[in-house]
Image (cartoon, rainbow, N blue to C red):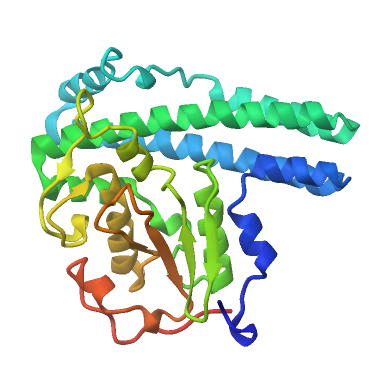
Length: 316
């Protein structure tokens, strides 16, 4: 726990940060906090759109990278190969019109909140979250399959290049100079776009996120995506993309890629993933340090980097 003098977030802020927005909407309506519930409906919309455009954009960018490496014909072939719905039926999706339909549904839910139709508003918000989570999992399956094919064709070097192109840590802290609170709040918002709960705690040195399970990488592992018939790749190159380990499931490699990208751009990792040996079973912990100078050097070394000597604390 953080001492009062070094406290940035209240207990309630930390608790609510990782709760499902649809649950908070229902709770606020139960207590007659209609205006606050309406604000949460808008927060929910941002989560939905962040998830949708992040994953669809990621898929598009990976296919563009494959086309750049191997030509458009090969990119088309790769896309067709992951859409073998007998192997992975969850990848059969229709994304045309989804964003507009969800926006319309959010408007309808907001209207129900305004008119006092609380039960109906909560029911429709919950149903929308279930629908969006299913699409999240489908898009995640497609992305993981694309990365697997790319790695198996080209290896770690090109995988690192592609991840550096498609991951955008600067979206949460453009130049590494955001005040600590604002940076953590941005990470909270992005984590909620996975539409699953997580816990957040604070001590004197850092804030710790702990999803259980991780809403993306661990859920792919637990759902058997690295086993037959999907057979996603395991990256087996000791280097930055595996945190210097012998291996790491390919989807999980986007985390070290984000850390590496943010360090190279700003000198400080956007966040630090403390991944256990049994990734996918024991939960990962994600750290955001209040004082960058206190980040242990080992977190830089595992990326093949040296810790900068001129780090400045920003923890307002």
